[in-house]
Length: 143
Image 1: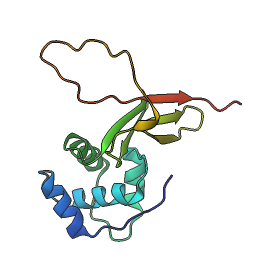
Image 2 (image 1 turned 120 degrees about the horizontal axis):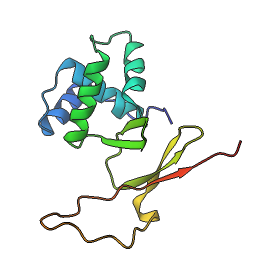
Image 3 (image 1 turned 30 degrees about the vertical axis):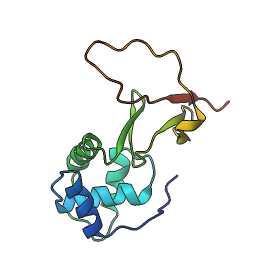
C-alpha cells in the first residue's frame, strides 16, 4: 500500500541518518524521508518516480537513489527484500516479519513473524551464527 502514515522533518531524518552513521546529504535525506513516509515496499525505480514528481526536490539521480537505498539497507534503516529475481524492493519496516508475494499482481504484504514458525533449521557452518530468517510465501491469483 502506498499511504503516508507519518510526516518527518528534514531535521528528524538527518538525526536518524547520523544515528546510523550515515552522512545526511540533501539527496539522502529526501530518499530516506520519502521511503519512511510512504511506509510501503518500493523499488528504487518507484522511489525515483515519486521524487521526480516532488516540486521542491533536490537533484536526485536514479543512481543516487540506488546507492542511498543500498546504504540504508546496509546500515539497517530499511530492509532489502528480493521477491523474485526481477523484483527488489526496500521495506521501511525493520521489525521481525516475513512476506507474502503475489506473483500475478506483484503485491508484497507483511506477515508478523509470530504468525509463522520455521522448524528444521540445518546446522550452521562452523564459526557462524544465525542473523535472521526471511520467509517469502509466493502466491498466484487465478486467471
